[in-house]
Amino acid sequence: MLSLEDLRGQFENYLQSKSFDKNPQGLYEPLNYILSLNAKRMRPALLLASYNLFRDDLDVAMPLAFATELFHNFTLMHDDIMDEASLRRGETTVHKKYDVNTAILSGDVMMIYAYQYMAMSPPDKLAKVLDVFHDTAIKVCEGQQWDVEYETANDVSVSDYVKMITYKTAVLVGATMKIGGIIAGASDEDADHLYKFGENLGIAFQVQDDILDTFGETAKVGKVIGGDILQSKKTYLYLKAIELIEDRDRADFVKLYHSDIQQEFDKVKKVKKVFDEMYVLHYAQQLKENYEQLAQSHFDAVSVSDERKSTINEIVGTLIKRES
Image 1 (cartoon, rainbow, N blue to C red):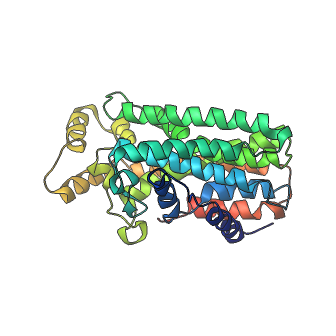
Image 2: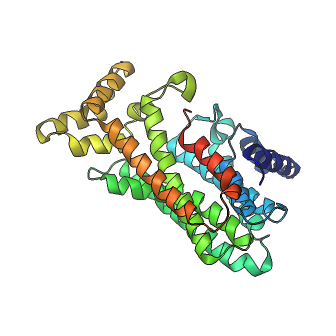
Image 3: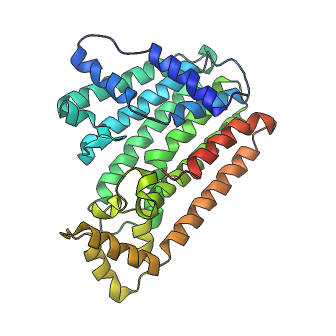
């Protein structure tokens, strides 16, 4: 079994060999730019690690790992446009560095290339791989639309939020792991366990993201703490507080959370005080742990030795126990 560092290293080498040095440069330069930004490469690493559970030669899996990274960055490029975000991984977003039309078109071609590389699956596995990829791509779009609609909706529940992050974020994690298993020759049962493992891991990852944004440390997270609060995002923390707070106080809290307070620090401080009073951090950590345990139960059911599972366990630790 290769280590996480080895998998990332081999993928980075492959990525560098696939630079989009093509014309028109205005279309392809943004692809090279976003792929050059500092990233953990967890999705391709998970696909390669899933493949490596069953087989040692990564050549077959590498184009599909690249496809997942292309697809992921395509979603980020378009997501940044929709969110009007100015920074991605600490650098200027594509639509700010270039322009919106360029970011839309470059994102489109990146998605098309993702399909091209995904189609490099072994011929006898191609139908299964594309079924998973098609279903995932559709769900990611559905999750993004729910995210947009929830910004103005007044009746979003915790279960709504979990479904949204499942579709927007977690299904792609599940898909990368299932695809890695499929092309390695895993049984249908093992491939399904890998998918559920990845999906539940992705949910836990997103809940951890919510926690870090509000309760992390600026020096470790690398951004101002409380960004979700300042943007009035309907995170798990907010929705759980709404669920727990007394009826007579709920309207005041909603007004505070969606206010545009001049002193930003005051808003974050006041909202966090309510979060503390409602113990929402405890509930968020418990939810994260529940999904971690569910993910682990599916991974334990995959019929390979514990020794071969060591790298994926390392990746899980990196994802869930991270402080940034």
